[in-house]
Length: 133
Image 1 (cartoon, rainbow, N blue to C red):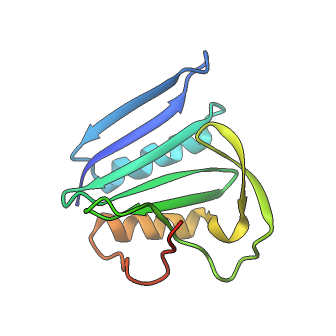
Image 2: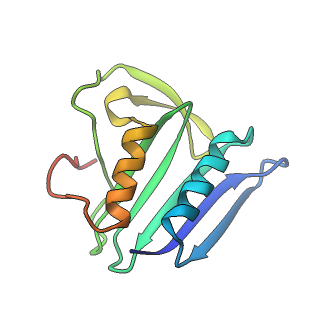
């Protein structure tokens, strides 16, 4: 179970604002995620940190998201590519700015939520599919 949820987004003055929620529930994560997707302001990422020190970083726009996993020992962030997608470049907003990423590194909302839920409930298999940057 995660011990914190960090939400980062830009306000009307284009200033980065962060909020950390200790001991979040899955329902709270879903509410936060859906709220950030319905706003016109740009999201600068959501981070979910587990009790064991591992974490997920989520960012994206337009229904496409990159999710990066960091092991508890601080090993580098690793994206979860989708082998069924092309490597064609796609423009998304990440970190509050337009970014070009390979489509294969972007998950749709349904797949993203499944990955986060598995991480949330300690069911995420981090030994298969994750790719070193």
